[in-house]
Image (cartoon, rainbow, N blue to C red; front, side):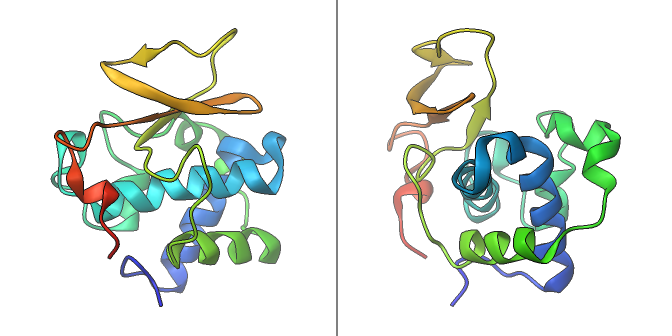
Length: 143
């Protein structure tokens, strides 16, 4: 059962985003990017109050993903990428991205805070950031 509404087009879009943002971090890194994307669709807080679909999440502007501005994002999604996207859509969580709404790839160590959000941890090249429960309890609720 999915934690957000998603059709096959949404699966493909998320798969392309996950691959473009984190293929270098392997399947687990891609799944963590998927967690962040699904979290952004399911919550109604902070920068994501009006994000209610995969399309609006992926192409959010400002505040969206850098990968959408690069050609690699526009390559066809592979079946293995779609399988990973379906796992994220079903709500499978992977720390440190489980409750994260943001991530980025710093040149060095992960800052303790990024845009006033707390570091949840690092996986390979990406740092993940989650809101406090008082800022966004939706991300901590199971749907």
